[in-house]
Image 1 (cartoon, rainbow, N blue to C red):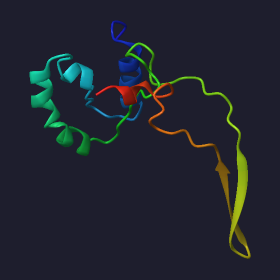
Image 2: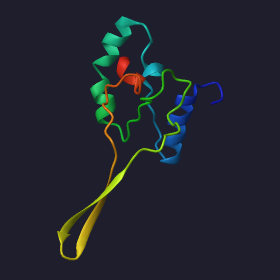
Image 3: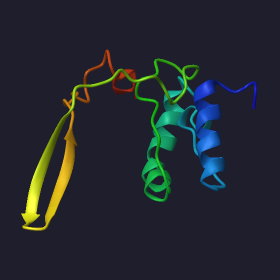
Image 4: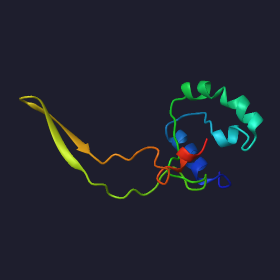
Length: 112
C-alpha cells in the first residue's frame, strides 16, 4: 500500500470501510499513453461504471499523489425555510455554485 499514490490509497480505504471487495482504477486498468489500449478499454467502461456500487473522482487533484480529500475553505451559506404545511418546515443550506468545468478548481475536467 505504501508504494501506491495517495489517491489510490484513499480509494482503497473507502472501499475497505464500505466493505466493497473490488475496485477499478482507470489509470491502473488502462495503459496510460497507449491509444490502442484506450480504444479497446474505453468501449468497456460503460460496463465497469454501470455495474459499480460507488464512483469516486479526484476532481481537485492534478495527479495521483494528491489524494481524494482536501481542506475546504468555509463557504458563505444562507439558510432558507420552506413551509410544507402549518406544522412542518424544511430547512435548506444554500451555498454558491461552482461551475464544474472551472479547470483551475477541477483539474480532472482537463483530462480524459
